[in-house]
Image (cartoon, rainbow, N blue to C red; front, side, top):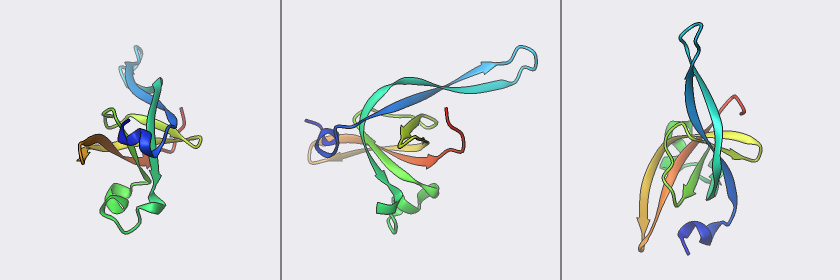
Length: 109
């Protein structure tokens, strides 16, 4: 059992960014494609108010997972797209996990 299983057994959709070059203009076009579903635990910012992470970078929540996510990855939570801005590795009493700081995006996939 991982720490993520202890808190939640919920799966979330993970989207990864790919950049395609438009042949006519040469501009890069970013697209987010469904990569897979990952197990994780989401903690909304309302629970983080007054803490360092709650005030960090306009964070709207924190996502805990056993696998490392990268900045610009997006996770669908409650029909909204949230983007990872920063990840940190945490270890507590022999259990290790990744903590990703999320911000809400204006666009949906």
